[in-house]
Image (cartoon, rainbow, N blue to C red; front, top):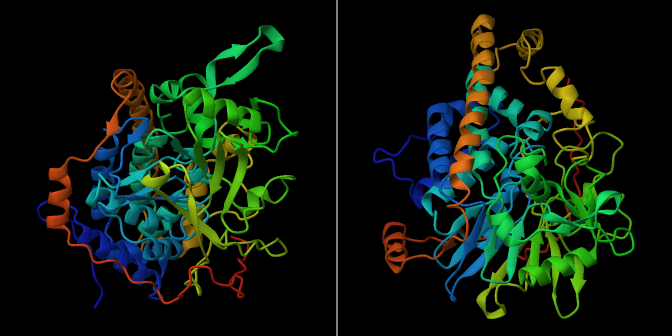
Length: 506
């Protein structure tokens, strides 16, 4: 019998509800039903309520989360998961469920490229709602308007829920993305953020010889979360840097420079990392953002074949590491392109090492994956080659990508055959919906700008410590049942030998 998710009658998301959602979405993905069947087992109304509930929690969290885990707690840090639902569920089966003794920090990029971003992000939000004091979500560069329009998440929602309801969910997703914190400081010595180092307000030197300086944690704590599409300009400069920056090997880059590869963010060498660690009293920076595709042509950088690399090691001071948690990534590969068959990694941090000695656990992809097709043009860049102000972004918006103009919309509907969601689509209503989408987006941005100014002071210097009564209440209401290992045995198993090849999307 098919389970249909319902919103709890008391409005309280429990651990059991989060488990049930994960099981239901996993089973539906393997059922052989078409993608639009998701709307039947996880109705739009329930999905939207979950997003709104999570947003109400995230809105209260500062740009820089300061976490003080109890000494008997372990912290699991998860890198990019990119819509690979089954691999993320496997990760959690190995690492154990979130609990008062097993905290999670998810380092962004939950959606895009993989075929189950809607499901994966919903599961993560459910765990955030069920255990808000033990599950922490950070923003990645894919939790933004530009990336989700180009790399599949918006189209995925439209296919699974129909254009009208899919667009509504996407608009709510954008509110969630804009509310996500940019970074988490664990204890005193460890910083987790998606892309990398950010520039400070001051520069060294003057005029043409002026050089960028590394930013401070105080500047990060006082920064704006970036709105719908952090473009690295003005108040969104720190957000753009945090989400899009990349490390470089010694000798290639000195200091901190604009990231010309992506057109947004910074690129920084080991000397900049050393300065950043010293200035901010840190020993470890954990970042994500780059998988094997991004590292394929980067001479001098680890190829990320196992999902973890020590990019900068500064003797006697600390290190900067990359953790990537999507195995066999990307899920879809154009015929003739390299399939990396990479393993993935999550890391554990413990109090005995002051949370600054990452212990990586490698794992491989869950195979066979259910049959699926991409929701984006897989010929568009092997990695995120540019930010929201690049040529691709301008072409996407000018062309009305994924529902921007009525002509493209009508073409999509005709190609879908069954109206995407099993019913007829009224194009006049869809056009009205697109106009409302633009109006709502502009209104949300105005409100976001205003609330940004109101929040900046209150977001500084907030450290999260869990009250003992909270722990007692959580353990009483949510009896822990660790999820068993999925039968793979050792987490470090041989790479899969049955690569998927995706057809060109039409």
